[in-house]
Image (cartoon, rainbow, N blue to C red; front, side, top):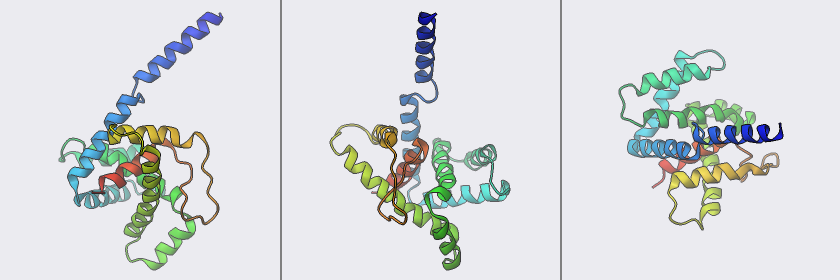
Length: 194
């Protein structure tokens, strides 16, 4: 019986490593998203707005479902070049992360003080992703030769093995993030950097 459990455990681990969450698959997806967002150049902001508006208007429930957002991403990407869906994955992940990354108090201030709340929220996220990118650069500075997507994958896989706690109001701290949010934030920030 013990041998059977070990064999089943090994088979499940092998199947998981070869599936959609395999490192090579994740890295390829990150690489595709980076390439697509870099190719957009300054147009990536307009693409982000287009996707945001499509999700907001078509999935207008208080909390848009993931399936509706994916459907809107496919519709927006239908006439766009390859890699659009990977880029849309990054943008949708960042949109879903906004309320967790930007405090409620800050969001209320943005509503009161800005003429374009969405642009102001993107500015707040940009500042958070800049901190994350600085942490990323420091963490991978000794790994010359590896490509950016591999570095992002490794960093985001290992970053939160220990919980990152931030003191209330700490401006130079990025709390623990799920892998997807870490990778999406870094891809967005790095794709927009020279």
